[in-house]
Length: 263
Image 1 (cartoon, rainbow, N blue to C red):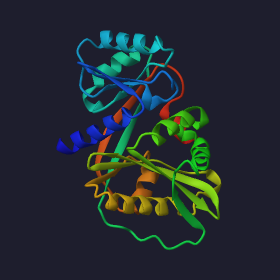
Image 2 (cartoon, one colour):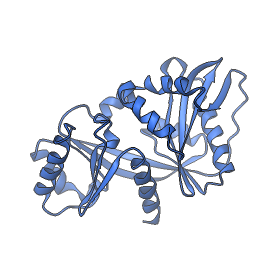
Image 3 (spheres, rainbow, N blue to C red):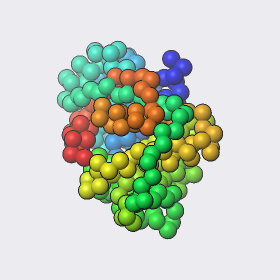
C-alpha cells in the first residue's frame, strides 16, 4: 500500500503540472480547457466503488460538456469497480482495460556502448524547436495539436528536464524527467519512426539515470505503455514492481489503445 501511495502522489503531482485538480468525495476531476484533446489533462479519476454512481456520471458528463470536452474516466483498481463499470456502459460509455506495469530503477547503471553518431543535449531555448519537432511527430503523444502546448508548459516548469538525442546531427529522439521531492519519473520517451531500432532509447535512459544520480533521487520510475516497451526499460535496469489493473471509459472519440496502435 505504501508503494501505491508513492506512485499516486507522483502521478497526481505530474497531472497537476498541466491540469487543475478538483477534489470530489468520490475521486477527482482534472481539467484544462485550453487543451481539450489532451486525455491526461481532462478526465475524472475513480479508484474506489462510488456511492450514487448515476449521480456521479451525470456530474462528470455535465462538467466536461460545459467546456466542450469529451467526458472520460480513468479507473484505478478496476477489480473493485465491476458494478460502476456496468453503470458506465449503460450510460453509453465505451470501456477499455489495461494491465499497467510500474517499473522502478534498480540504481545500477547499465553501460551503453559508445556510439560516435549519438549526441544528447538538455533542451534549452537554443534547441527547443528541435526537441519539439521530434515530439510533434509522435502520434501517441497526440501530435502537434496536443504536444505543442504541453511542451511549452513543461519547459517553463522547473520540475521538468527535457532531453533531445541527435543522430549524426539530426534530432530524432526525446525524453523528459519529472522531479517531485525525492522521486523522479521518466516521461515522453520516443524516437521518430525512421530512426527506431538503433538503440537510441537505451542511450537516453542512461543519460537520464546519470542525471538522477547527480540529483540524488531516491526513486526513478517509468510507466511503460505495453510489454514490448517494458522489456526495453528492463534492459536499462528498470524492474517491474507492480502491475496495476486500470481502465479508461469515454463517451466518444478515439480509445487510448487505438492511438497507441498508430504510434
